[in-house]
Image (tube, rainbow, N blue to C red; front, side):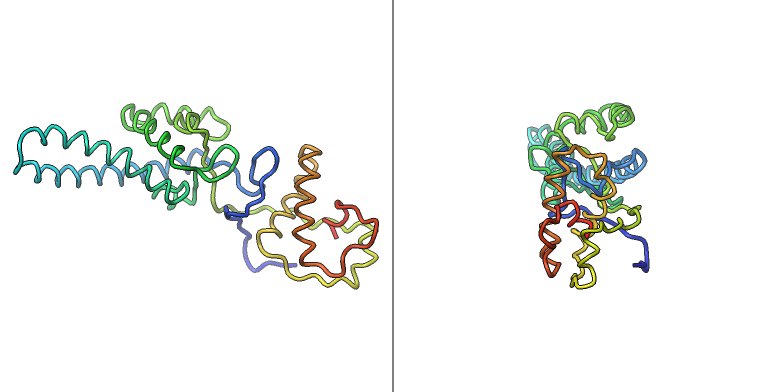
Length: 244
């Protein structure tokens, strides 16, 4: 079946994950895209810091000297720790820079991050990005297979591309046991998520651990069964049904 445009995959709540905890469709973000998103975040953070310093500066001029000493500390904590942690927690791993570049931070098992993950990333990010001008973060990401900076190593996270162009293999040939009933099969259009997951699974099945392949394949077959009538003939194996 031809397509009117390039196919894309997006990270969704029902994204299929293998036993090795890797989402089938979404590879780690490249170093270049991470640098681009990081620069956007730095520009926004520095701009926000300047605005808050000006506001606090105007406020403390009318108060005592004690508040003038507390204000800079409160400003630093708010800008570099509270705001980034809150944004990444509420957006489930997307800062402004990641949103602009189509990236998202996920756990090592490909699940969504929590407040703890976002807090650790922001805390260590202040040291490696702002205190040391980003050098530790750059070399850590350069040496890591998943592009992890030090904050990612400490938090147990990494950054993935949320929307990527898919290079789908040709459709798999039907086995003989499935060809017998294909003329009478009534197959509804599969939802985008399961359809992409099945094609990606078939293309990578040979590289997966046998136990993981069986478990994930059986789950995919169960998802597809809801959209196929009549059911597969007796004796059809789960592997044959997935290609039916």
